[in-house]
Image (cartoon, rainbow, N blue to C red; front, side):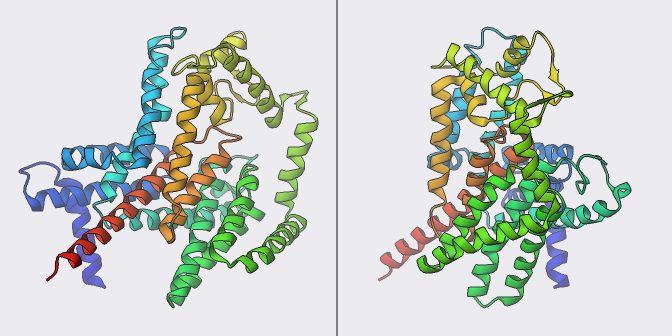
Length: 438
């Protein structure tokens, strides 16, 4: 064990620094290992720090440029998950040309939220040649597990929080929306790991995965949870039951799931507050302090529809959403409850900027990514969780465009699709080898 750890640490340090020099097999392997290490470190940093995550993304991009084989990379772009992603990115780029109502700096800034999706084809290429994709998943799960324990601590001792927020108890870093997104993703991914490893008689791993999954869900129920998570979590639970239980057990599990949710709601003040607050804000969207969170969304959605009606086919162009909202608000840059410029709905945000063309590209990408993970196995389930979670959470937020949720989606889809592609290529090579044997 000590020898394995020592070898891995040596690979980390060698890979981190050997990015230059002659293009020899040893140097190329070291650069590739270092690049993969930055993906692992970035995944571990994602729940905690945007700046560290951004630095790792930049380092990974540099590493990719030093190791990429252009011919193989362009062949990998034929993967359907890459093609649809590139199509949406192309619409984003072309949208710069017809965003005539805003300045060029605003147009360029508008490229970043969707431009990061270029990470998907890069990750598909990279991890179709690597067997270390699982380490990225392990790093993210371990990081979220540590954050979950820290969350319980700061719930009782708020002074130990890194960024204390009186309105977000149990959230030591970032915000409760990001924290919920990561915890739900890890919980349902680990649930599949528990089932799959139990079937393979690897009981210790199965029990550990199940315990961590339950602990993450308990944190969501009793510490803090985003209301959006209350929408997509039951859907993911139903999908999990459908995938891993027989048909008869599935129909038994559905009412059991409803009963479990009712019991949780009855014993959890956190869930009661979140649900009741949502209905209260819907009935009273405006208070003396201004629009509530639900009221703000309703107002922004209404304005978004008006903007879409003005340019339904190709939209107002890349980067146009925030200037349109600011102009409509008479030059004010914010509301009492949040910043203008984000309609808190991915569909509306895309359609405002790129119209029906962008809308079709967005839903084509989501559809193809869903189909990419329709197979069996843990990797397919993890990818499916990421896509379903992103689609449903994007009904109430622009999560594909946001940093944390966007990169979580990119990592899960890119690495998952790349690893599945590698396994498929290996099976084809093995079949061809067996057929050619005398």
